[in-house]
Image 1 (cartoon, rainbow, N blue to C red):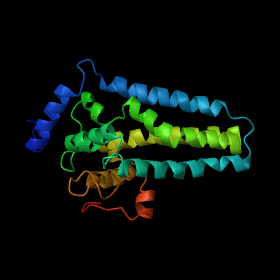
Image 2: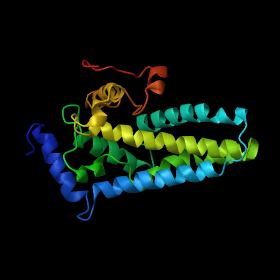
Image 3: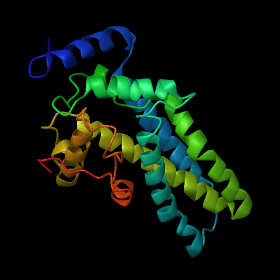
Image 4: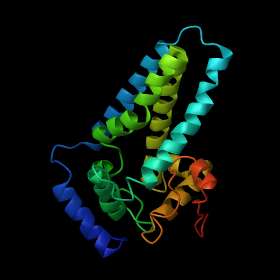
Length: 224
């Protein structure tokens, strides 16, 4: 068993590593894929912009708030409640991620554990397909291509920010990023969310708790 964490968590981690992580998996390769392709797609969107007007730039804060709400809805419902047709998302998050990491065992132990933290490509496609593409098509048709590309670019930037923050919450507490004051405060909110007794009730924003505050699901832990 792994020293310093509950036996049940240690046993689950051993089982997960043996059955869910392919032998050839490399965590940093996964991270490079996520951040490399995400950054390339973001740059590609920005290169499509042409003579953006002042009014069109207001797409950025609107898209940011939309992304925050999408993060909240996706996390609160299909990730924590069985939804027909989305059972694999519920299984991977509530059934695996929350058993691999609890509020008393938040840190990954090796680069292979990134498999339990980073989004698999199929979920990236799902969330951008459901929350991104329809809005892009609507905006390109109803407003302007610049607004559509700014919307997607902001969503991509938000997603990359999401992955960085989520990774920092599960990185060793001594790491430089985890010790950053702002990140440390957000990390405590996420740690509270990983308490099995409240995980389906509070702190569904993994980045910035705007929607949690709006819908009154923000909960500060005893150490926050």
